[in-house]
Image (cartoon, rainbow, N blue to C red; front, top):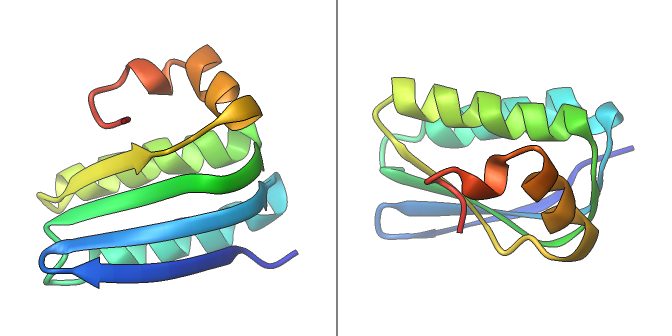
Length: 103
């Protein structure tokens, strides 16, 4: 399965829009994508938009947490946004929603 995504940049914010199911099979691709965006010199803020994500595995949640750590190491702000439905419930259960980088 291929990771469905698009990327937008406005000024110093790069937004990664994800879509579909974030199952364990896309974890490596998602991690590489996040690292590539975090390494972009103009990206002071990296936002991961989950509005169009229908399912998220615990493996993918782990990738988001790893992305957050990589962004912090690169002195970038990392945000996860617009999760809804089952995806938001999973993020609530894992504690991600309570994190300061979720909105």
